[in-house]
Amino acid sequence: MLKKIGLLAALFVAAMMIGISPSWADDCPAIEGFGDIENIPVYAGSCLLAAADDGFSKYQLPTGPMKGRALSASEELQGLLQRRLYVAPAGVSANDLFENYRAALIANNFEIVFECAAKQCGSSNALLGKLVIYPPDRKMSNLGKTSEFAMYIGGDEHFLAAGSADGQRHIALYVAQNQDGAIVGNAAGRSAAHLDVVTAQDLQANMIDAAAMAKGITDEGHVAVDNVYFALGTAQLAPEAAPAIAEMAKLLTENPKLKVFIVGHTDWIGDADANLALSQARAKSVVAALVEAGIAAERIEPAGVGMLAPKASNSTDAGRTLNRRVELVER
Image (cartoon, rainbow, N blue to C red):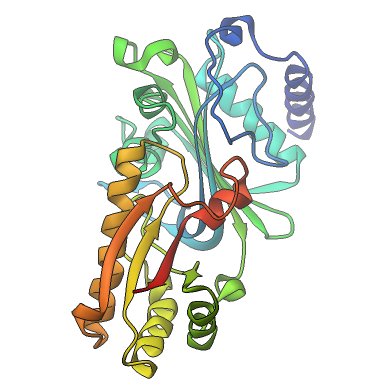
């Protein structure tokens, strides 16, 4: 078995040196601001068709098959969540793609905690992929429909969950064969790999308290509150946002004459109109939470500016993380 794993790892490394396959040489578009995830292997010749860096998140790592339409077991992680969706060159089967990734991860000292294929994943129609890994609310739209349908699962489902030797990184690797059809574009019929990578990070590392908010408003007329977290792609406040909301409420309670705009910001990934609408909806969610905490609604007005007022360059992961934020602006 060890010889087999070593051979597969060697073949994977050799394949990585080939470079971009001719089949993708002209067809693989660039996703501006995104690249491969550091120290995570990529199958040679694959095309990156969707990507997201979601900042601090809670993530349910599947550790058991589907039971009905839900996971039978999972492990809750928290940290920086990065997502990538690659489509393999023509002629590469889902099984080949999965086995190469599996061997490479083992060679990089990842320990597999759960893996499955086809019906072993809990169903005969790829429900793990369709309901957990890449359901409608997790689709990435970097390139519009091209990204959204880069994984359009037809079958041959494979999955593994693994953790690094030091416990600092976890990966959920999902591989399946795409359906044929015009909507899938150049990815039709090819195997696709979706990766969720969670790197451990302390939630409270950058917490800002009411006193710091007051100083920022006094000195500059506004202050960014980076620890207001939302459920992925939605305006629903995550439980982890509670400390930041509490500090905002404390600020407004201790300064009864202060009135502010609650301003939502996004990075530049995705459709501009959708980002603008999302930033407005998120600002409204924060206002609603503050009203529930006892702050008068007339003192807090929501506004969303989408990607129009960045704090840093959107061309880097770190910059995009800074740009996804809520600000208090004195009015």
